Structure formats: C-alpha cells, structure tokens
Length: 202
View 1 (cartoon, rainbow, N blue to C red):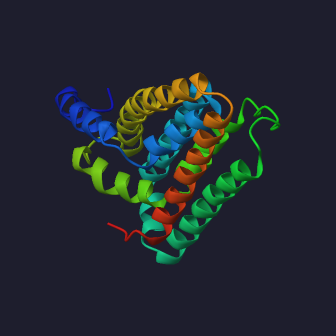
View 2 (cartoon, rainbow, N blue to C red):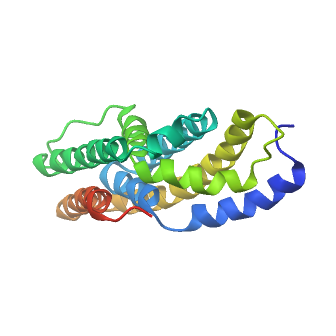
C-alpha cells in the first residue's frame, strides 16, 4: 500500500471537510446544473475530479512546485482560466434558452476539466496541503495519486450532489423562470472568473 493506513485514516476526514466547504468547484457545478440540469452537473463534477487527479500527478513528479515557483506561469494559467469562464458566461447570455441547441454530451465534463486545470489555486492548494501527509521514505508519486484520488472522489460526490440539486430546480422551472436560472449560471461563471483574476493568492 503506497500510504500508511493510519495516515490515510487521518487524511480522509480532513479531505472530506475541505470537500464540504463551498468553493469555486462547487459553485461551478451548481452553475452547470442551473444551466443544463442534473446530468450536466455530474459530468462537470467528474471533469473537476479528473482535473484534481491530474494536478496531483503533476505535483507528484515535481512539476507543480516548478510552476508555483514562477509567478508568470501562474499568472498565465490564471488568465486562461478566467478567460474560459467569461467565454462560457457570454455563450449563455447570447443564447435565448428556448431556441438554443442541446449541449454536446461531453461539454460539461470538458468544461469542468479545463476550469480545474486552469485554476492556479488548485496547484498551490495541493502543494500546501498534501505534503503534510507524505512520507519521504515512500514513493512520492504513488502517495500524491492516492491522496489526490481521495480528494477527487469526495469532491465528485459533494459537488455532484450540489450541482444536481441546482439542476433539479432548473428542471422544475420552465419559460421565463428557466431563462433567469440560466442567467444566474452565467453570473456564477463570471463571478468565478473575477474571483480568479482579482483575489490575492494565499
């Protein structure tokens, strides 16, 4: 086993507490649910979880620390992520809801993956949180993947449930009410973009 069982049992409740704390990933999945329903929220949550695993892999092989050490790289990632979120918000506002084409099945997963991968705060969080539980005597990559899997699985469930509840609301509202919910999802995406751009790095 790549991780000591006692350490893993300590990590799981800490990770779950973090998953339950409302944050950008949860708001993003709620926005997807408001936009396209519960199925889209779960796909978006799966994309976010996959992005978390990729971040953990990058950190495990040392590239995460390299990126974090270069402010220009973090700034570029931040602008990419904010730009993509703003583009999503604009696409929602440009559609009139009733006449909009049905979303492609893979789009929510792709959006969740890209939004997570272009959020530099995820890189910094993993580099700050996970190493506290890492044993230098064991293979680093395997440990990062194990801890990353725990975080991603918890996030998948929590964010998926939050997004699907918002999606259930969207499914029950039609006409003008549904249009306002989609506009609310656009506002969420735009707010996340502004947060990504202007919130100071921790």
